[in-house]
Length: 273
Image (tube, rainbow, N blue to C red; front, side, top):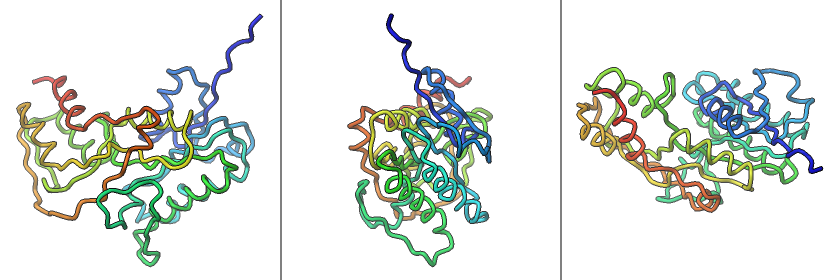
């Protein structure tokens, strides 16, 4: 008699967060045995974790909570990697680590540039340490996902574009506290989740989890306007664009992020007039 198929086991650290919650639902829907521990659960260091998806971290409030930022981005990672009770460790980092670069396109092998005297670099430096522990101290079982600007329209989704999309459910007259000139690389939450699973299943090293192209606020606004929305920006800043993250390694895993204009257009079509 053939044995029963083995069920993949996963632990999602940060399962209550934006990315972690959607990832947890997708893994369970795909048949994974998922443990979503509460923050501070002592069993994290004693039980078999299977594949760890490390989605914990701070974003908007990192500068106000520097010590919590280090704890979330590096200290807990250090404890988990030292305990070693996992088969694979996927660490969610950020393409913000490239912000010190002065290049149009950046690849995963780029040497990163930081100013350690800048107090706002606690985010970058702590993420970089989390990456180092994952890659250099996990016995070859670690992989890093550098996420770009992840967005969605679920209530409470963080980030400028997410807030823009949520507001579009309430009104067709949109006044946005930003500039039309600002450009970002946007990737939808579902594409991000697909990338994390692909990295867990067959990826090694660092992967940019991004669309691989910058899109300005003005370009996204035109998608809204074509569907009957009125969009006004309160600012006119024109800062240098961030480096464009190469997505060749991600594409080699079979994952390609959908263009933000297409995803937004499809979502807006489904909204009531």
